[in-house]
Amino acid sequence: MSDQAQRTADLVELHALCARYMSYTSQFVQDRWLDVFTADVEYSAFGTPYTLERFPALLEAAPRGQFIGNMPVVEFDASGDRATGMQHFVFIDQQTHAMRIGWYRDEYVRTADGWRIRRRATTFMRKSGDVDSGRQHDPLAEQG
Image (cartoon, rainbow, N blue to C red):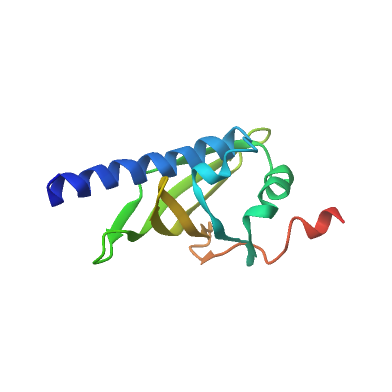
């Protein structure tokens, strides 16, 4: 496969990877996280980093709603086996239709099973024009 064909195939796979994340999160799929993340993932939201083991509880604590995201803008490193990206999103709450908008800043890595997200950090865009990582709190700590 030519370098250009490989790069195109990698971009298609990364776009599908990020779309699967949106789908799994919106549909509260609990058992497919290794389809999108590495086992040692760090997901950062609300000023708190989360590991893969905490994802089921984090998802359970989250409001129900729909995630809609664009294709991530991806930059590959020199090896071609690591990349960074940014994916903008909107979350619409199912009950109130209130929206959250922002973006994910990602690190991707090619694994034996294909591309996976190694790090994902959330930044929210506020009505005021400010951006931040969310109100500092741990939604899981609030559960007791």
